[in-house]
Length: 538
Image 1 (tube, one colour):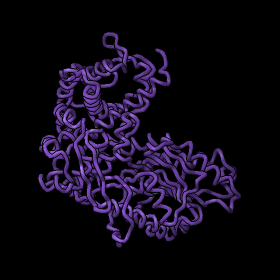
Image 2 (cartoon, helix red, strand yellow):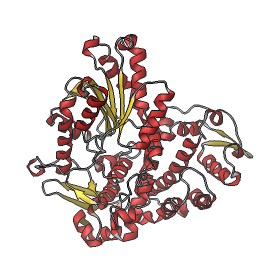
Image 3 (tube, rainbow, N blue to C red):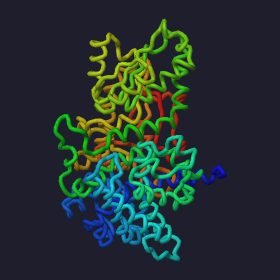
Image 4 (cartoon, rainbow, N blue to C red):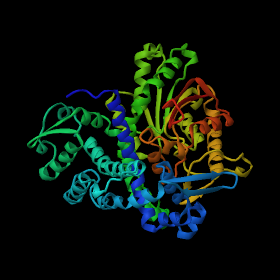
């Protein structure tokens, strides 16, 4: 099996991004089609989000998120006027073709809805039967009559790749979390019965993967190809988006019904909008991409004289503990502080709002033989964290390096006071709270107030942040297969999270008194398509 070359790897990565596009686009586009919104847009040519919302009695915030996803796919154009607090959508040359093809999403969207009745982790027979029918249709390209027009054919292929993503994503994640991509299976031939008791059903999944070129098949024996290994090793890349399928299967109600359906949860019950265990698993895998740059910053800080170093680290939003564990190992193995931990011990704190994340973090750090305090914490209340650390452990929050990954956008919404006096936003984002559309100016003002709350507690050693960002839809549409912006916008937009463009986040941090240390500022990718940044704010 020849190893994939650079060009093939780039194509495989583009496929992952297109799969993620599909997980976000298919349920949003199909619901809009079902309700008649797409036909309405074709008839009108243009309309505001408020106008469409009024016409369909929709919740404008979530409707706006769904429409923006279509813009990022190149099927609509939008104009965001933050002075007027208005979003206007216009059809374009792709709209009619794309909207007609949205009917093909029916099977996979209904499967997403149907699968919600079954166990989250087990492969059960009933969904298998539905999935097999979809496999057959996909192998036949859904009977599409391929167009001779290059642009029309491009959209046809785009929609089919979306459908493939909805098929592949949940399956890959289930297999990854279930152990299918264990070294044993990846390095040797195997038979279906070695992994799953329902041999007949599981073999159909493997047959479909073989159709995609992921496996070599000889009778009832399978072996990973190099292409298959590429995707298997990146199974966690699907994890975060797939974890929001509970939200995607409820878009009909969120957009056109009760916007609080997933939030009306009795105290102590699990979250309804996301599979948190899966989300933590997917997030942990994604962190590894950014660790190398983080290492440089950590080594710089902990190679200074001991009295100029932080006494320890607090990871707010510790997830599964992987980030905290990695930082500790870098300090221990690669810095001067690591050589004197007996004399200058490292005070480690993992804090999270979610009990599942705290439980996973405790287990993982204990397994790694790393001592740390694992406590409840709220990203929006640094004062409470400071109080708990001072009263319970005698440590000043200012004496610690504050770190966090993909968290500042995921804070409980608080309407900012004085937002009307704040300069008009420059963001193109779509933001909502319990179905209501938030003005982008309010969202910027809210972030500024949030960071101002943290400023007093990070004066000594700074705030090390990995943050997620949105992209203007026209940029995402012009670069298909090069960004996961549509998936990020969907998962975060429908769950009341607030990802702003990278340059806007940096500007607002500065306005809040937190200046970026330019020696330690990194973008991923390092271009106008950046959806992730690492920065040390001082």
